[in-house]
Amino acid sequence: MNIIEARIDQSVNLLTENTKGTPMKNWRNYIPMFPISTAEELKSALVKRFSAEYAGVATRLVYQAVNEAYALAALVGEPLLLLPALAEEKVQNAAAWSDRQSSLLHGNPLALAA
Image 1 (cartoon, rainbow, N blue to C red):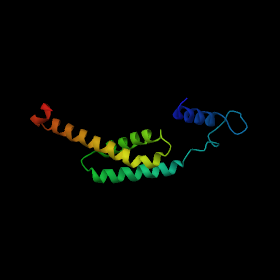
Image 2: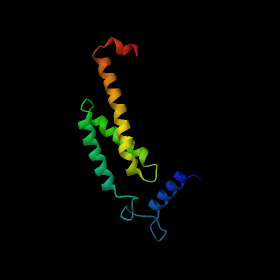
Image 3: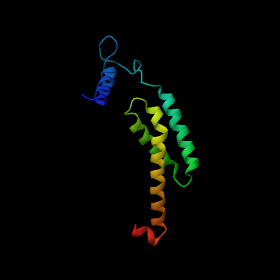
Image 4: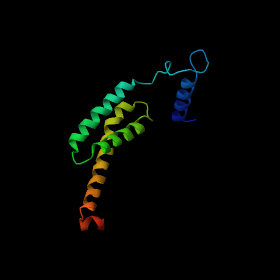
């Protein structure tokens, strides 16, 4: 079994049993690997930063790119360390896509040739 499968199994078991081995009745006993508020604060800061840096990209696309990057980063041991780099790459791809869509919609004949 690889490391990722072991972590998934561990997290599933944590969610389904409390410390006494009986099924949990609610989420009060759930302890995430890192505080959710820290991850959400970082995601929010990244969305603000990239929205300002890539003004031509819709904020919803930036938000979606950051969420996708977070989903990828969550697969590794230290997701908050990788999130900024992955998010920036995703936002750059979204900016390139947005530029291409814009050129197609505005009738640039060279864009259709690409």
